[in-house]
Image (cartoon, rainbow, N blue to C red; front, side, top):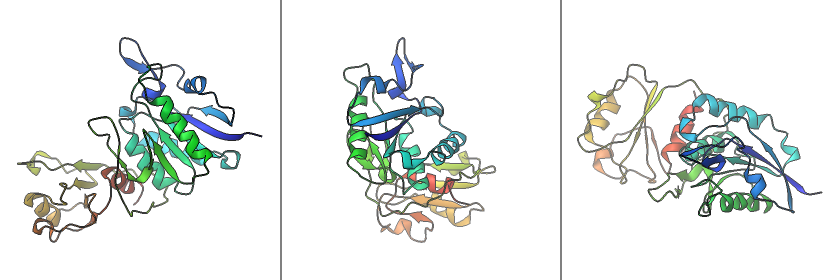
Length: 263
């Protein structure tokens, strides 16, 4: 009997078609018609379909619940077809929610009918990865990456993998939180932000694990939780002295996912 893999289509470019513009295809599982394999049985399902820039916390919870309801003893693993715009955010959530399951998220840079699309290559990469017996949650996009490490994409549309020691938190409930992510820039003024309806603030740090003094001062006196995230393993500059709640060696997407999935 062939091994079975569940293919879960959520839309995105990999499930789209180009006409006057790129729009969702009525058949968001059409990649199964392009990728015929004799070494595996593929079953397709679609919990919902959207262009991934429209992903919401509610839909992430629906995805978690759907995966939770799958009888995983029937399948070698799950492939999630996703849009590239928020792929790194969803992959961080899924990596923290299902660290012991075998799941690969994948996407495409162009609709798969386009000869230059990487969608079919990425899908076959995801299949081969699961068929190899690898365990855990991964992203297949031009290469295989641990999902908890993925950030981007970069200006060249490729994704970056950040070395991390962060451990998945194994939580499957997204909390009803209004989390504000702020990226520092030259001459940033926090007076431009309304924090009255914010449950927590997540500041990204400059590449050297630093932030402007006004952000550091804000964090020390804020009456709401304030967190920082850096891909660096430590914060070594004097401008970062005294800053608390830093998640080191992490992507901003993983930091955001952890905040969403914890009280």
